[in-house]
Amino acid sequence: MSETGGLFRGGPNIAIKTPPGDYIKTVMFYRDTLGLEVLSEGDGSVSFAFGAMRLWVDSVDAISQAEVWLEVVANNVPNAEDRLARDGVRRCDEIERLPLDFDGFWIANPAGIVHLVASPEESAAAGEQ
Image (cartoon, rainbow, N blue to C red; front, side, top):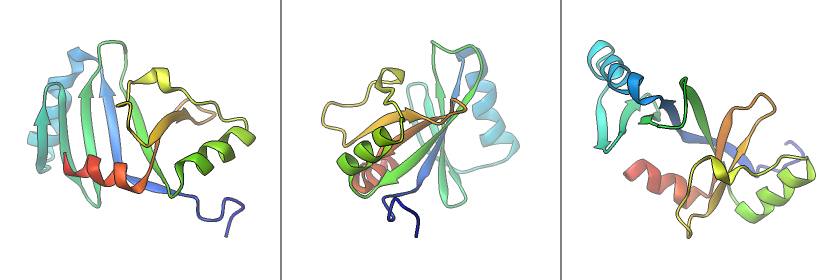
């Protein structure tokens, strides 16, 4: 087992953040071209069944090109935050507002890929939306 002792595992959610001008075409690609099952639809957000994962396509005003965001589940969020801080990983909660009572936070890997670090309960709740 790694030095993190099983603190982290890949989460079930992947998000593609798109500029508004690409949002409808991207949704149509996954829904109509690939025929993926739509799991939920909201204002500027659609989720699809993507194998064992849930793929979210979100329209984001503040970006000019699409980005892929990943989820990491931490079995203990405060310990995860401490571990990441010791390794020099900075929180980037300014990237997208989370609810005040959300048990998690945002980070980015060295290449700039955004990751949501969330408790198992938060991750499961996202899958129910």
